[in-house]
Image (tube, rainbow, N blue to C red):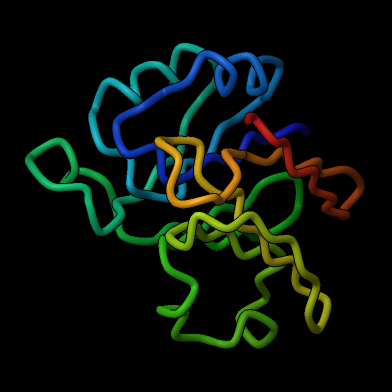
Length: 151
């Protein structure tokens, strides 16, 4: 199963991001969507799960949860916007993958058997940080991730 991970779009849905997400069976947006049109654009590609980030305000944003726990292909994924707000032990909670945005810095790390993924920012460039997203491959109870640089 191929899952697109995107975050920190801040109202900008780049054509390169849409192209990179084509073929995904699901998309997860880890917050700071910016505008509801971004969600509509992503939903046109694949089923979407999205959370609210610190810049998401208004009625459309209030409909988004602050965190999500998803069970996909036998694995548990926990989605939150800012990793610094993780308030539980993923190992003890049985979480296999933690997905977070906020920092705009793409990062993939495994700690104590848990995969932590920050897809980076796919929105407007911030400082000299890359513009990126990620693709999470779930197969046979295993999770692998590829960061995709869009800039």
